[in-house]
Length: 381
Image 1 (cartoon, rainbow, N blue to C red):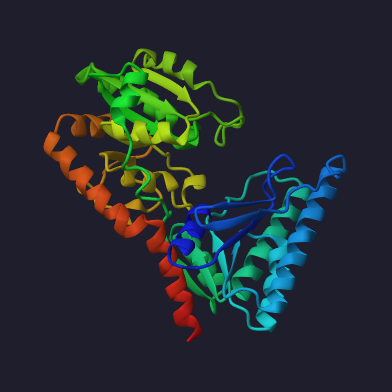
Image 2: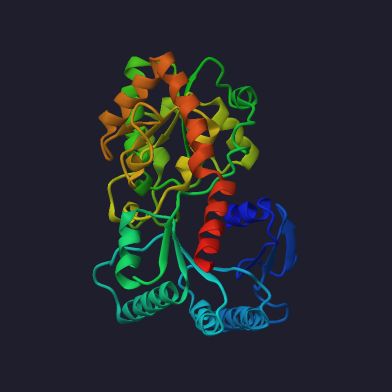
């Protein structure tokens, strides 16, 4: 949402983001990237209230604010992100008085087994709100695969649909200082393979750790840099995972550096320093719908990329042209793809050049925000 708001502003629009995020220790309103963000988080003096009561207050404030703006005609376009009950109420009023609303959705969760009654009721409410918003809004913007597109074609056939890719600031990731990162972590003379993001078996971190040992057999000066933090509860295994212990188990510890969370400038420097960027996601229902943001940032960095063939990326990116695809879940296939890139300087150069070009044409935040505005404008004619 930050990237979309930044893109709308960059294209000459006045933009405000209202959100439930924030706390009493921060400013209620901030200006960032030429748009204003306003938080409706907990009010001072009420933080001792029960959590559910605070949440009700927050959503009531947002509901009142958006209803007032809708009735007064204070906006040209209102974009809802996600299936929130208060949004559906605003969308209903907006539809009656012909205000322009867009519904943005990025994922749907698979149905878990053995759901409790409370979980079933909550899931039912979310689905009702989701379908209502899709039908009440003139346009559904879909950041996801064809499965998500098909969902709204089925449940909201009269609403227009626009499928987009993850927006990224393509200029942010090209200005890194790779030498600075190498000096900071004593990586001069090393072949750097990098993963940057959440540490989770859903992301294939265990596959990557198994694969780096295979890479090292052909390229002994390789080092794997893993930047990010592990989730408290692994999304696949349902428990806290110790990936440093995994590295020991796979005899990969001597080839691997865990940096933990990095500031954004260090992330940019790391991407610039890398010989290969990897996205080893596994083939799992949780990876079948959302469009990964990571790939946009990797491409924008203009470095060679090895990625699992997942999330329908092969509909937009060509194997051996923009990225090297490998089969999800296969440590050997991942390692072979990494070794292929490390051994071929001509391939490295081609991948880097093509990555930068397609990042600007398909993933740039200004391009994607402009697409949404143009689609809305054509609809309103």
